[in-house]
Image (cartoon, rainbow, N blue to C red):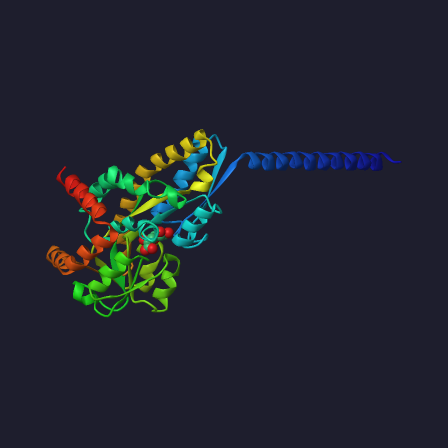
Length: 348
Ligand code: KDG
């Protein structure tokens, strides 16, 4: 055997040994990763808004906090854009235990607990400060405490926000301009009654179907907070925006009770602490997002009009008989208590 061929053989042996060592090391790493994953508690967190939405960002903030507070033992996997279904489907998935967390608007919750419909009453809160005070106060907590018997844990409130109207037909400067507009609304009786009462043709529909319905003109318009109109790209098919701020919708940060009851107290404390830390962040980015969204929508050619204070007053009066009927359906004690808390908070 020549020196050259002996060297080749040695080199070949060495690279084979190196290859085997690499494969073994990868095997160990993979084994460790799998072992770690088995030890790591995975939390599937689905939501309907776009990943780029402020609340999508807040969901990732929450996920990071859970990882930090649990030293990596709990891992939140986020699924935006309705990837795990509509709000109603995700609510049911949590109840069934096939999904661990989500945030949903209070509107679909009203289908399970009618008192949540109070938040769909028009002009309930004057501003975010009042909304935060009521939601984080005893009346907000009372509503969250109705959820465990339904299989859900309502951890706390995040912000969906003040809602504004868009449509593809014409400018809407006053309520009577809504006549004949096919307007998608969230799926509950209060939203349906309010907009039918204003002369629109209200059509309840899951959020996940909304963009296509707007694009195909199945519906003419919808109403949502400004950052949703931007990040869910509704503006691409909705040339007209009316700043109405007609309703403030909260989000409820939800966990599956079936899953929650299986957590240790330490694990529950991690989720609760991460939820608390994310609430301030979520409200901040939600409010900043709405300001940025209005500028963005104007830059992108959306024609913006606004309900005047006088028009809002006229709408309140026009809806008076409908609201008093809805108050009986929602639960008069709840409506009076939330209204009272809002009036109290408005004074401070
Ligand atoms: O998951 C996203 C929905 O919860 C939220 O966008 C609800 O405001 C809402 C709507 O219009 O359905």
